[in-house]
Image (tube, rainbow, N blue to C red):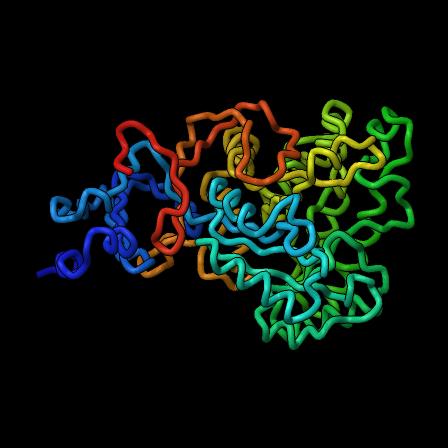
Length: 455
């Protein structure tokens, strides 16, 4: 008797569904080797037990022995490692009318994400072990992997470092005061040194408030349109320059968050060439939109740092193509309708992004010839998992069965959201890459029904 037959005999049907799954007829995206190939996957106990490539004739011979409810027909679908987003705001605790960990997790599943790293600018901020424990405990109940960064400074005040060592022991994924730039260079250097010793990434929001009149609006055509002062590119350039130099000095794994300027991309490129352990995030909105969207969409396209010029957008895409920018992160930032309906200078910055990220990557980067599917998934799954020490990001025998299944040629209209909030400039757009299933630890945590597929 085979191991598979023994497992089926041992378990009742419902238990089988939770502990085994057979996915047939899919196209695998291998982001490590940057290849596509047709194969079936046999999943047991939350891991990929066997990969059966079609071209090698290794398809499962005993499908008739597998309960029908355990077979997923992925014909016409691509199968990729579950996506990982290492820059997400779930607003919990403190602002749960915008989003909470449960609703945020549902948005993540719908977007194909199985690994989330939360930012720490909640209320109270995640600067203490009790708050971190609260977040991690709620995350464990969602069906996907949710980790959290903790703050760099107590109360996000930029004056005193948190107990970095204690919080690392308590399970912190990394350190950041995202949302508030750190201006004390000596404190930043010390934080990098301590993060390096702990082997944890440290991320920075790079906007010098001293040169910004109104954040979220590029100082250019957008600010002129609204007859207000805006946020100049120098705000980002100044702090990126400082922090890549400190990264080289300290050896820390430094993340430049949501990069928005061509000069910032070039500074990261040069720092990497010198051997600095610098990483950079690109958001889907920064590689898709420019300041023209703020003129057209108003507060729905207002974010920090702001959407800038076409040359900046193209530089970000080139950075992604070269690998200078190694992470795609959404900066998912939910806000209520009432908040976003305020005047442009009063409304909060930020947009939601988990449910549109993969589709925007396909449309803007793959279909326009900048990245292959393997390269896109590498930046949306493998690289962030590697940086944060997460076990996902690969499709290999023995690897966690964290997967996203999507139809690259099928389109959908951006309308309703699983998120509590709907602050997106992409509402009404038709996007490619319809997600049919998200699988975490071998369990289907999200699925869309389609005629002809066994669900």
